[in-house]
Image 1 (cartoon, chains in turn blue, purple):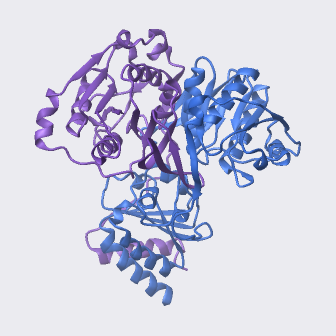
Image 2 (tube, helix red, strand yellow):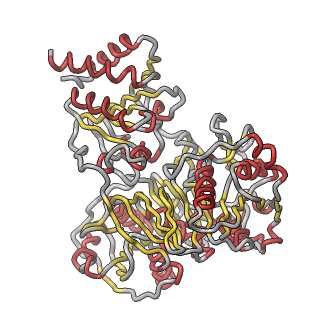
Image 3 (tube, rainbow over the protein chains, first blue to last red):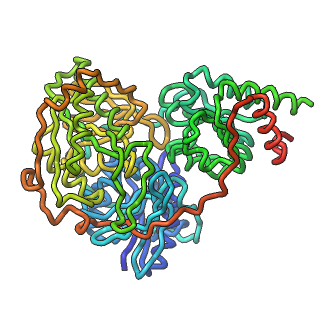
Length: 326
Length: 264
């Protein structure tokens, strides 16, 4: 039966949570298919010791293929996975949410003339085959995606697959020697993982006040700092404003940022793109302030205020201060 | 150097997008526009051309799509592209990501670009993946979600945000780069450029012109099919307040927070 190959991303001595989720999910599906789940790791050998690789067994991976190669770039991993699938005949390639998974999955699709589905939120077995479920059209509809021929590539949405430890068996670690394609070595990492802006802790905050492009300028965050101060919470940001240099990367929510679930998430000037939503939809109470009544964030907020945040936020800060003080 | 920018015509943001239940494909009728994410790719091409660090001989807008898709090309030309290439053929209809990437790669090969630029996603398909598919077919290095491009010794020094922070990657040319929307603020076309757009050269190619094998494209040859559309398990719609009197609005917010013990 069709075995499943998962790419496991590692950094600084640990596997990415979304990769562990993908290994867990791949193992669950492989068991149902009557096959096995395996993983590929690519990087410096020193950063991928036997124990670390073998630890993927706890999430259900039976074999781990270790390839020595450049880290943080997609194309060398495409080469590695294409080689392993070519030799071992896996039926599916599975990726957890994240930027690299999208790039590797897409490259592998081209290389193997495969079927691909991205932003997958769940996978099930039907007639001995995997069927992916993906939300489409701004999450207004959900579609089943069937793989019709060749290898099926499944690229998960961020946080779609839960991390589950299913045993304490070590995975068998096998080294794969590989000559990379010339084009895969023509992009070189100059520096990786640069943290821009101050290091702030948002994961422990019970109240998060998040700002997006609707703030208009970097200075707009001052009003949010004041409101967060009144609540005793912290300030978070969208990718757009972090990329623009308005706020710290360490406070970023969503794809390539943090995933949070505070008691209260107040989004100011945030339209609610899916990449943001996946990082905060687990919040207990979501309040959104946006001047655009059609902003997608109103579709998943518990309380939506259509209006000018510059008028509302300062008054709300005063009111919260008064209540908290009183 | 020659830059090809991939563009796509998508339903206008104001049009409610829906799936045609009969075909399982997006209903693309109604008002259409150039995919907004693509304007950032065109702007990036123009900034490279105008930047003068590297000599850009021409910027070519490329699209695949039905006859109407020429409007996206006209828009791209009005934003600065020198000419455009329209890959159109009934055999391409309903192609999946795999088939679309393959077909576009063949069309691009006929242009021999030094750089292929794309936007980060299409507003309708939301697949984020065509750039990396193309790069593998073209055997070029590639990077997506790039928010800064600098020319350095004939290569591109690119920055992007990835899983663990910001990465800086040196990408040799020829290359495929998909840009994030934070890379620039796209310009507006001048009236003169809009009027002149239809006069710029436009090549129309069918699959045979660029060596696309018919059995690798189109709905029937797609490797993945969408089916069984259903509504998501949406949560209860929230309460909406239109802010007319801010004092009152704030009172309502505070009461709402109070009910949920969020001010304790």
